[in-house]
Length: 291
Image 1: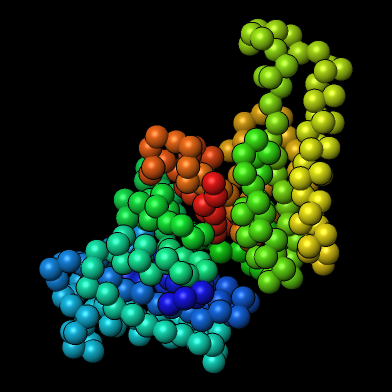
Image 2: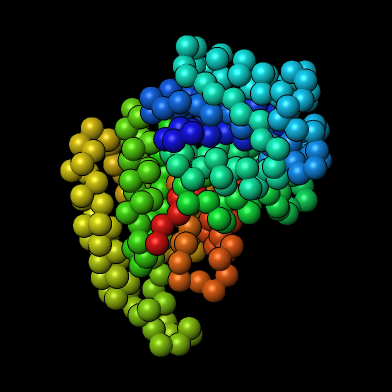
């Protein structure tokens, strides 16, 4: 469906939580909600994100087949969140990754559920979810935890690469919610020194920090003019990006990160910062592809 919020449904608690989040997002954006269940090739089970298997055969199964039941349950969840909102259901006889990617070719947003990170770390999203994120040309939101509402949209910005699509998404999401944007940017003093054992010069460090603050302010100025009703807070830190970004996400209702789609020999690369956000952020994470 063109320009809709698409959510993968497989009957798991995680996919139902994602459905509720997607319904709220679709209502806020005034877009249709598209519920998608994949039943897998040759009648095999489909699997969306980290959810439970949706056993079934084809899109022509009896109305009470498991995929159809999952869709009906998802509709009830969505209607509880957004009564009267436009909702469409689709059951696809294809592998879940292919079905999701095809469904999002013209969609505004794709939403998937994910289990919380347990005591054993790993690819908690599942291979399908990671594959979809790595290949999608539209933003993908992974829902594991949802906030109480009212928190800002946190967004990580790398001034060394393209950040326009990431800020577009973050500001539009904040405007829809009636909340603010927290822009996080980590800077490193390594460029000041030719070898790692060099002692930091306080004056140089101060100049570098001031320059980073100036560059960030200059970079976000166009979005502040475009979205004058969205409060903006800049957060700067020296050091590693991932821990800083995860710390900023503690008070946020949504974390927005980018994923480069060009310039790397491995097309499925997600990147270490985005990977850390997907597995450890305490709120939903939006992954926005950009050049």
